[in-house]
Image (tube, rainbow, N blue to C red; front, top):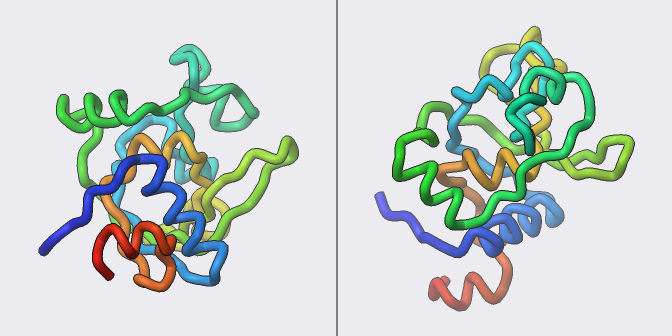
Amino acid sequence: GSFYNVPLDEFVQNIDNALDNGFTIALDCDVSENTFSGKNGVAVIPENDADAKAILTEIKPEKVISPEYRQAEFENLTTTDDHLMHIVGKVNDQTGKIYYKVKNSWGSKSGKDGHIYMSGSYLRLKTISVLLHKDGLLKTTKSKLGL
C-alpha cells in the first residue's frame, strides 16, 4: 500500500486532532524497548538511560524527540515495525503531562485493564505509521495531500 510521509510535528498534530474529534487510530509501532512495559502499563523514553527502570513507576524527565533523532533510530534499526495496537484516547498524569491511551492486544491482564499509557516522546520516536479516518486530519494536511 501507499503511505503519506508528513513532518513529525504535523504527524502528531493530526493524531491529536483525530482523537480530539472522536476518532480512534490504528497504531503501528515498536514495542521492543525495555521502557515499554505491559506489566506497568506504560511506554516512555527516559531522558537519562539510568532512569530506565525507575521511569516505569515514577514520573521522570523524558527525551525530546527531534525528527533527526527519530530518523536515525529508524535507519539504524533501533526502531522497527513489530506491533499493531489501537489509540483510543488521551489522558493526563498528575502533572498534566499527556499520555496516549493505547489498547493492546495482549488481553486485559496486561497493562492497565489491557491498555498502555504511551508518552508523547514514545509515540514520536517509536511509531512507524498510523491509520486514521481522513476526517480526523487537519484541514491543512488534507489540502496538502489532496484529500
